[in-house]
Amino acid sequence: MRETEIVLNAAKGLYEEKLVAGTSGNISMRKFDGNNESFLITPSGFPYRLMTEEDIVEIDVNGIPKKPGQKPSSEWRMHLEVYKKYPNINAIVHTHSPFATGFAVNRQDIPLILIEMKPFLGGAIKVAPFKPAGSLELGQAIIPYLEKSNSCLLANHGTISCGKDMEEAYTASVYVEDAAKIYYYAKTSGNPVIIE
Image (cartoon, rainbow, N blue to C red; front, side, top):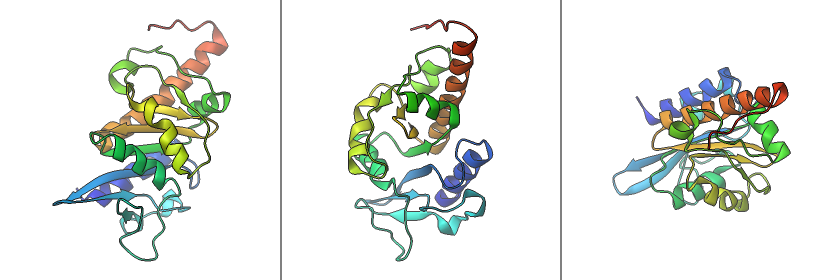
C-alpha cells in the first residue's frame, strides 16, 4: 500500500467513526527515502469526505511542502516536535473526538479504568497544558506526556495518539475515545473503580 494511501485511509476512517468533524483533527506519517526523511500530513482545512491521495501533503523537517501551493495541516509543528523527540514514533493521529475532548475541556485525566488501556495506550490518559493551536509551544508542551503513554489529551482542544506505524496510532486514537466514553458513563451512573 502506498504511504499516501495509508494516511488517506486513516483520515477517512476517523471521519467515518466520528472521531473528527468537518475539517478538524489531522494525521501524519514519517516517510523514509534513503537518507532523506520527510513527513506526510493531511492538508489544512480540507473536508475528509472529499480528500484524495493527491491532497496529502509531503513536508520536510522544516514544514516546507514538497509540492509548491500545497498547505499542510496547521498542526504540522506539533507533529514534527513529536517526531523529533521520539524516533520510534512513525505515525500520529490528532482527533477532536467528543467524549475525550470533553474531558480535555474539563482538564480532567482519564485514569486506568479498563484492562485494554495498559497494552493499547500505556496506561492512564493525562491532560497536557493548554497552548495555542498550531503553535510550536503546543508540540513542546505534550512531549513529557508521551514518555509513558502513546496518547494524551490536549487541554481545551482534543487528543493525540502515536504509534510505530499508522495502525498502532489509529487504534490508540479509537481506544482513547472508547475509554473516555466508558469513563463518562461510569461517572454518571456511579463511582468508577480505578485499577491502577
